[in-house]
Image (cartoon, rainbow, N blue to C red):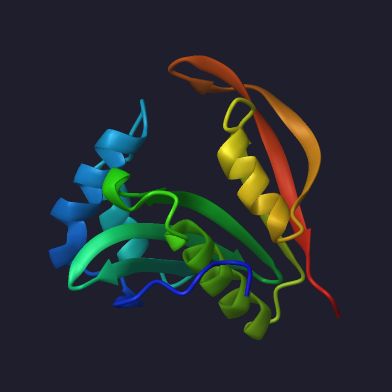
Length: 154
């Protein structure tokens, strides 16, 4: 395990009743946050893997990913500011990797801001590799995205 064990943490399905807390975390985490509707759509998308990390019943973070055939894609990941640097993001990523591997994914892709060195370093600990750049992928502020991939072992 790359991440730490967090006392009292449980990873659970994202539910509609979680949306207010998740949207609040999203709003403090990103300059262009997802709307409640986007999270709602992930909950009801059969290809989606949408999870929350609860610490003592409080939502500390979440991840949304999906799978199409043998490819996974991490779409969104955030941790509440009070819980950052506690290993919650790593625990959520590890959960998604394990889930997608069990469901026969061969690759997991993601995009991350070029400037987000903390996230890039964390993904690197899971053996994600940089495979390219998407120019001007982000618009507020305008910034390139690094495309990363994890190639699953056969």
